[in-house]
Length: 162
Image 1 (cartoon, rainbow, N blue to C red):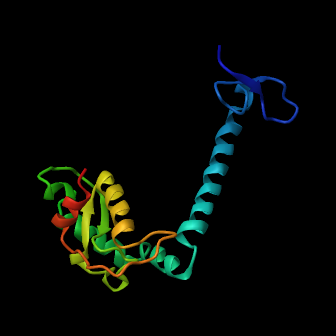
Image 2 (cartoon, rainbow, N blue to C red):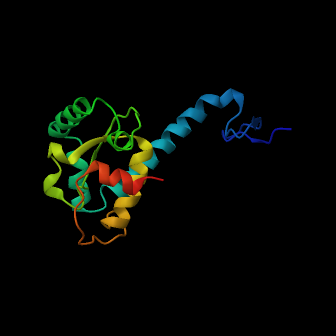
Image 3 (tube, one colour):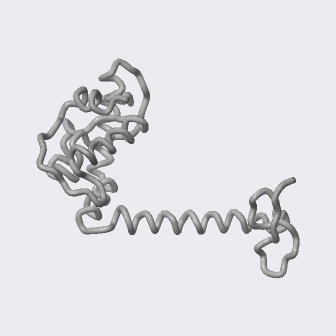
């Protein structure tokens, strides 16, 4: 038997089913509530992560410039929309994310250099981000390390391989 609860609409005593907040008569309010929640979560994320300090604000704003849009398109076309980290390991995987080989946080002056950009798939991007946090000390709560810069996609691909 499905779990039910009272509709969240003030004065409504009908039951809402299947984990919903509103009954069938007030179902349109469910989407409105979800949209408000999503907007609030995006604002919270922006405040906590993207705009937590002046450096992060500047980095985040860079991704909204015409310069970045042009660079991103150039890299996607240069790399044929293929993950360069997978390709370095002999795999073919389409991707649409352009990533900095050496993170902006570690080398801010290289943020607009084509030779520091590569196409990356979601799985490789997740592994690479974790690796960067350990190797370079990037990310929230970490302290940047003074370590050798690795600019080779093939070398990084070997280091992040599972």
